[in-house]
Length: 346
Image (tube, rainbow, N blue to C red; front, side):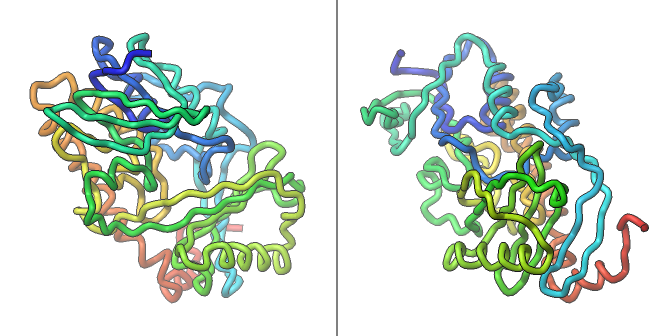
């Protein structure tokens, strides 16, 4: 494998996959995939805007990445008050690992993939040096004119650029269990005493997952308490655990939380802060930002072109933030649940 490239992409999620799929074939690209076995906490539910974003760049979600059951509605549960409502939703249920793998097979022959963990970035004389640790423990240094951070909330790229970064971060925890048929379905769970954020339940074929976003301190205890309530009060069966996942997740609340990068380093997807502050939906932003940066690399002024493309996404996230009080302020949330506005009528 060569050691010098035009671009080094750190990360191999949807943002990286779309960027390398759309990038000009004349560019030599190294993609460093630091993902671990088992993936990351994610519902793997593609919102309509994600499907549209893929369609806009000529991609259709293949059948082999789709899983059952289909999503017709999502139950909103406040387990503090016991109030529940079902809300109609039209999401595409996918296996997240297969979805990412599909996107990352679409790149051209001038893109190279490396399984390893990037742990250091430096710059000298207009070149960026990225150190990566391979699975065997060996360390290798690669150089490039540009670096793209697609390494999410806990990655090194944003930390390297912004030492003063104050974007809010949560700890996302998720466990997979063998499915008990009566538990099949999808839910968004709220419990203010244990988390200022939300949790989720979703089904994929013969498995069910429970996960949530929590404050860093006491996150495991909060997760366990919610699981206890769901088991004792609602009868969920979380006895046969299959796997466990954890990572950081961002919640952008200010325009300055969403950053496109500096100089020869660009940020896409959640690394840029492009994620809904309300639902933590990020795949649609990953797709759009990855495609926008690939297009920007065909222009004379890459930086300005990409900054202009990120601005509408930044505005969209700020509009989404206006819904936050109605989901996360307990009083307002329960007014909405009591009213039944927008819910399925039974």
